Length: 155
Image (cartoon, rainbow, N blue to C red; front, top):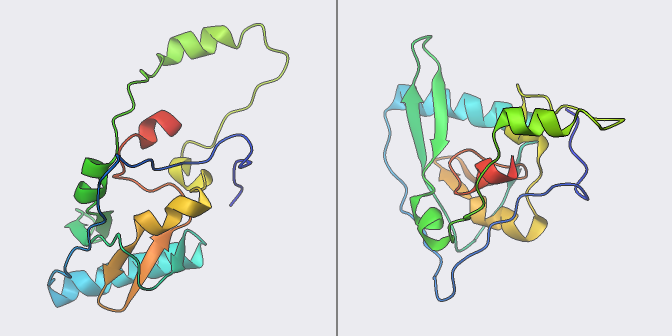
């Protein structure tokens, strides 16, 4: 999958001063949900969105949400990390204002909206903060993940 140039955009996760890392304890899940979650993790790993990682201070849990089509939406519980992150007060401009500003431009491009977050890489120093654990391993995101505070502003 094509990625955006890291010189243009990269997702960073600043932390408030004095916030200590949180390691969540592994939650128990039903076997059928665990198997579906494992398939989703492997799919993301094979796509190059995840890396295997060990022994880090920030560790979150997975929350598996069943979908109507018998699949699972894999969400990571970033509550503790989001509490430690300062709120970005930058307001997003409206889409119509952005489009109006491009009328005088000689060149513009669009990001693939279907792949959206997966095209923006995480800053190397912040990848370890996106660590989550499963029953079969610990992984971190190499690309911007859903559920993180302020990722909408980066997007």
